[in-house]
Length: 206
Image: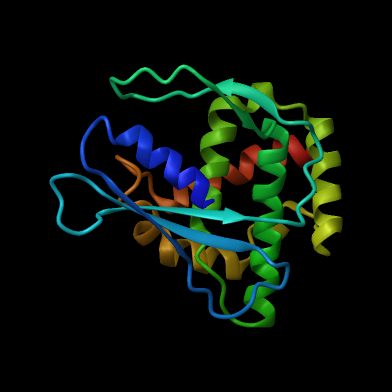
């Protein structure tokens, strides 16, 4: 990780005196699956403190079921970024987001708290609303079932992804976790309703 930071610092040096610092993210306790998290703090030349923070989580025990595909970086900046990056297939992205909801529900029930996951609903809504035609539904369900088995969670109906505990958590943290990231953020209730319809169509109404 530090090697990547050093390379980034060297690349940015031609644009000005940027300062990049790598720090471990302080967790409440040891992660049960040895997942690691880091904060990358970037100080721009005209800033006194570092105002840009990038969080990176590294998972060691998550099986990648489909071989990654390489896609170009899409961005709205003036700089030319002509490279390809390894990406999850869309089915694996959706499967992990769905499984994350089941895991969140389990943690809310067993220990009463979890890191806010309202963004999972927004991500699912955004992906399914714009790219559902590109999803192989059969492959998605196969991957979802494997992902669930790996983390010892399960589902029976669409409502397992929209439990009262999950709904309370999503509405409570919606604005705080997404308000500064999404221009024109839609209401939580709208996203939940539309996401439920999209997931039901793909997973349960084939």
